[in-house]
Length: 148
Image 1 (cartoon, one colour):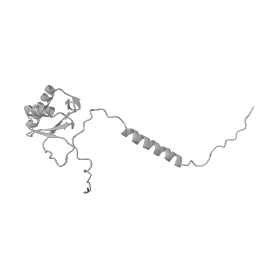
Image 2 (cartoon, helix red, strand yellow):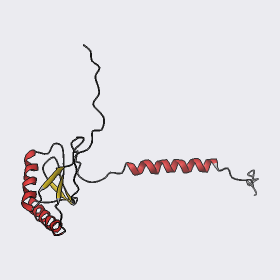
Image 3 (cartoon, helix red, strand yellow):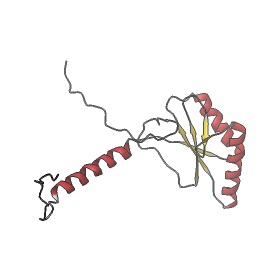
């Protein structure tokens, strides 16, 4: 038994508008999805300040989270190991004829005692200059109009 076919084969040109629409939707989804990927790591909120000096010396970075844990080269590190690594970096910089600067990326709620301990550790390792990393103010403080 034969069934009658009512479908006709399309023999004209394809319209590009639907394909362009789908392409742009896929592009938007890929763009938004790539920005929503979770980045692993320790969240450190730097304090805000403006107009602080920098340095022209070579630098080495140590991060400190709010609980006072030290991070060097994106890994948790103990104080004894940190002291050895800082000493090795300071000796290498001295051999090149320059002074090494320690840049501290400390969370704004880090206890001052831990920052003081890190400064002592750096001084014992031969590093004489230590700078606190900050981020610029995100927005100026709102100006209140004078009034009662």
